[in-house]
Image (cartoon, rainbow, N blue to C red; front, side, top):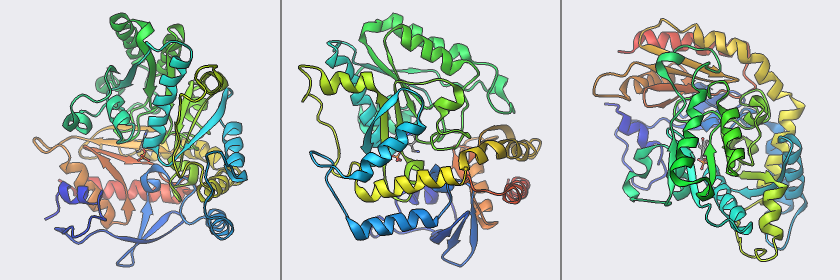
Length: 437
Ligand code: PMP
């Protein structure tokens, strides 16, 4: 019998001696838009791996760059020494990022990028002599990875409840989803900008002089594709600026073309002080993340007279040559193939396909933006993940990979997707939704 527990087992498929209760679903190869399963079937990748393979799989330029780099120089330290590709990639990132993002810190994942960003925010205030600014503000239903800082500012109570109080002094803004008002809205919802004003409540409660930073995903991805209402991010920017609070955008999912622009910051026209990235940076090929920040923030703690050595932060594998080579080839692929523009062009077609599923059994909401989308299903009483899990299994049987979170189906296909593949996703989902209980 398949159950959600079996699905969870797939989060840890490498645990020795793990006994699967069911035949595992195994991928053995990947190319372009498709995975090949161990029993020789082709599965259309509706999720770009885990929202990371934005250029599709096994792209020749990226494969060749990685192979060439391994053959030339496998590793070089990023402390005291350097190597050209780390700088080349940093320059490319700065050039594609919104105006003002001038410095890059390398990490190995989204979770590490989050920790790095939070430390940068705290160090910045300390370096300015503003050490009382130590509180952090996240958002309900925010996802910022699984390390201690990330689960503290993250808005998933289940992810932190085993660990007692983690970072001290964390508050959460309300999430931005107003189910009754936003039902079946295409793109950005009209209502809910006022939810950003909750930051004023937090400021009034603790005093602005105690708050270091606010971290949000511009569009919450893994908790169900929750789109920012019109004006919300602008208001958050206004309030943070007014009170000297740093604004951090976690662009781990929204970065690198997902919304039809380099970053969500550009898409929404709101520039944060610090930007967190990973995933699409290397197209999922090699683990790598990058945090970008303004010159003011960087200079405060790197050059401040008493604080030069106060921030020691970095990882053994930060900016390592193979990841850097993969990153350069990935960003070149995005640019040469015009994939971000392609995502923007395909977005209306994607939107029409998704919203064409309105009225099918179980569907209670549909959300979309760029090439990301979610279909929320009516939960089965007492079993709030079962229906989406059934949809996941049925879709997999029909050769389509989707993701589920709670009873929400989420999709974020590689940006190389063709219109007929979007049609196929629509037809498969129609079959799936009419066939499950
Ligand atoms: N932040 C966001 C917004 C994410 O979506 C994720 C991963 N889904 C992370 C951070 C964590 O990234 P990683 O799994 O690479 O640590």
